[in-house]
Image (cartoon, rainbow, N blue to C red; front, side, top):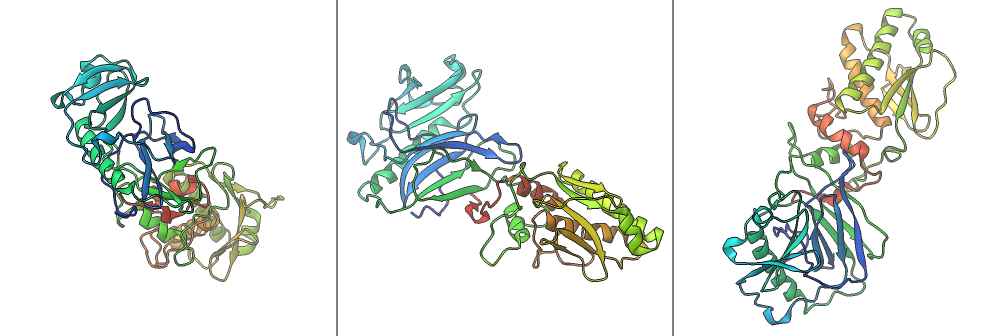
Length: 400
């Protein structure tokens, strides 16, 4: 089975009770860039080529640790992995707490056996094992019987692959997803990262949540439309990574605006639309990282891609990255102030790193007229795009 097909096995750990520590471990935090918080119960699998090397679920803080050395499974029960007859409940040190039969493998194990908060193993007599963590005798957040059976199935597949040794030159793949994770609002896209080796101090993985969208199949589809890169290249370019290169400031020079238009009413409309556009972005994106600053003819500094200035032109509106100037067409009539505000927002978002969406119009970055303004889908997707690490490849994500 190709690793690029959806795997439906809710693996919790490939760690067998009291397994010795191994070298070549890869560890890190799986997180949501919007909250900067770790994500528990994410399934992390490490492959070399198509051979599964290790798998585990993240703990309550989002931490994972997988090993590039294949686990040696108990030979007597392989490859058949017959249905188990009993399961040992063990603590983190491998000490047996209770021997259970199939009818006793239920989610309320922590409460029934008065388990203190901590990490435990369910070790079946056929070699399959799962790990769970309980806090305050809460129920196990998954079906342990189902997970043991599914783990046994994965071990069968792993045993089949043992006759094929991954070549030393084959790349590693780290696959993370939340399949079958309960109580996840909207869930998350899966993510795959290609690794030349696993000799790294740590590898943190930022995930993309998968909310309901109004006018498109999913947030990933919208972000691909917004990226505006070359065909087949969908790497986010924010001109820097949050929060180091934020806030972004847009200078609004009131004096130069009045001088350009020589019409106080029209100049005031353009100034009002600029302030309103920035305020609306802060509100819709729930961020204080888009700032407009009146400079009134005073000196201002444009540097480090953190600042831009609004200027006016009788040509088309555009953002010039070389000069960091947001050019706005000066021909909007007084009755089109809302369209002017949308135009200012569109060009300011170019300054923030977003591209045009030429083949999808239900977004502020579309090229339809009139522009729809910031849509609910934009307000969902753009904050994630802003906060994820710069140069993240959108093609690493998939819908699991």
